[in-house]
Image (cartoon, rainbow, N blue to C red; front, side, top):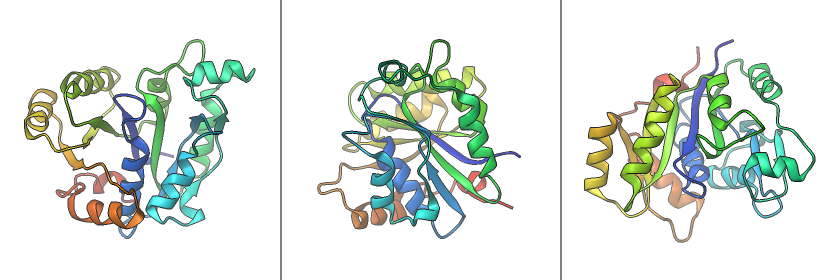
Amino acid sequence: MMLRGVFVTGTDTGVGKTVVSAALLSRYRDEAVVRYWKPIQTGVEQDDDTAEVQRLSGASDARVLKSGVRLPRPVSPHLAARLSDFTIFLPPLVTQLQADAGRTAWIVEGAGGVMVPLNESETMADLMTSLGLPVVVAARSGLGTINHTLLTVEALRRRSLPVAGVVLVGPPDHENRLAIERYGRVAVLGQMPIFDPLTREALSAWADAELDEQRQLVSFLRTP
């Protein structure tokens, strides 16, 4: 069964993938049966991204898939797995999502960036390719983001993964946005500020007003 939804990746660790995922879940909560899943998470002793997405989006338990690979050390997945005497295998993760597909559209959040290693031979890009979902890239808005974002977009396209758009996180930078759209031939779906405090109400208000104003993601998220 073909999966519906988007895969949220980032240009780096800590760039804002989790908040972007929560914003997408909040933005489309009334338009589609959208669920969230983070198949691989490291550093669970410090942070629980799944719980954070649920808090920020206000999603019910039914809208969040909580199972998956959960590793304690806040390091790259391949290293976190090795330190836990564990090996990450992709087929069970793919099968799990397909088994829960049905009439659901998924917002799948990656760990780290596109090329982060998962085991001795595979990277996050291999998981993304196996799932076949269009990709939303979370990127910083400031200095350096043009190079990082364009490299990420290029890596995705070299693997024939469609890029659904970019969300810039941080103070708005009009020139960086224009450069990414022009040279990357990709839409910037929104410029997310740094929320202080980061609350459900603030994120929901921004997502409803400013995220994917042209509704370019609707075709990926609507199910039959």
